[in-house]
Length: 116
Image (spheres, rainbow, N blue to C red):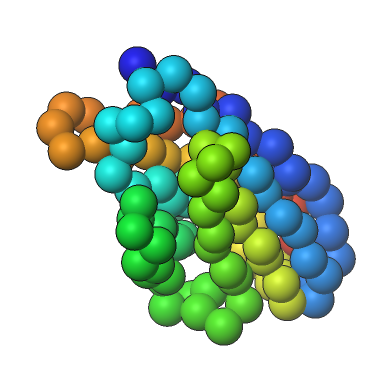
């Protein structure tokens, strides 16, 4: 089993920056990819960014050029640097780990609030 613990959320003004961190523990060898999803009130959970074991990244169109996902394999940590934040980025952000087989693992979520 893998456990994910997120940190780094908070309140920031529009145009500001935040960095989210997700620390993985347990059977991390079996993780193929990690990513960040978000869910705003009344909306479905959506992919924000993901990164594979090999370092390939994928971003939602809405965050391209503003967010950067990175992975420290030695520390089993995934970071999401969020710049030029907008009020529409307000959501609960969830870390996600995917495996070759079986269901993904989710973190508990961290709130990001961007004020206008």
